[in-house]
Image 1 (spheres, helix red, strand yellow):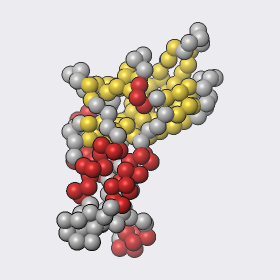
Image 2 (cartoon, helix red, strand yellow):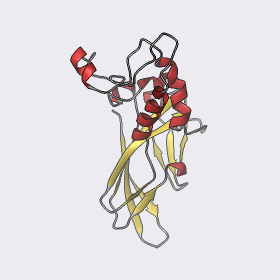
Image 3 (cartoon, helix red, strand yellow):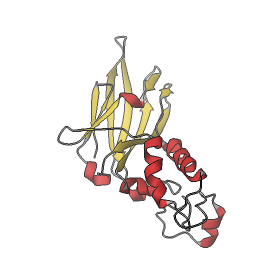
Image 4 (cartoon, helix red, strand yellow):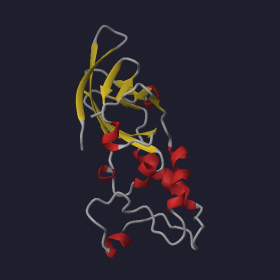
Length: 189
């Protein structure tokens, strides 16, 4: 996985300087967790993985709504939330298909035993139907991995996915920039 590690100096309200370390990468299908619905990359969304560490002596709050992502040409990419994404993924979970386990499975196709041991989203019973719980299960998985607002104490770390409305993903977002709190800019490798 390509990643950019950059120490950022953020000015706080006091004259002290806070040091926050960020790693930002554009996620490819092979980088996704096994239980994550990889089809997100096929229906007009991109995923950025953010990792951060507070190396300062004071607490710092990360707010996802203060993050902007700009493509190479300067076009702002809109953020997406799980409630935007889950309905678009529903077409992949119609009757007769397996659930969400193994979606990003990078070690080859799981064995039948591995497939049956892990809980899955149960698809509809007949072709063309979708079980009522599928949308909620998909949304729950997306919310689990989504980066949330977090207050980082000194020495703490946090990570999560930032979802974007974009047909570009993986290396196609290389050169884009992520702006945080209108103070700093990080280039996506």
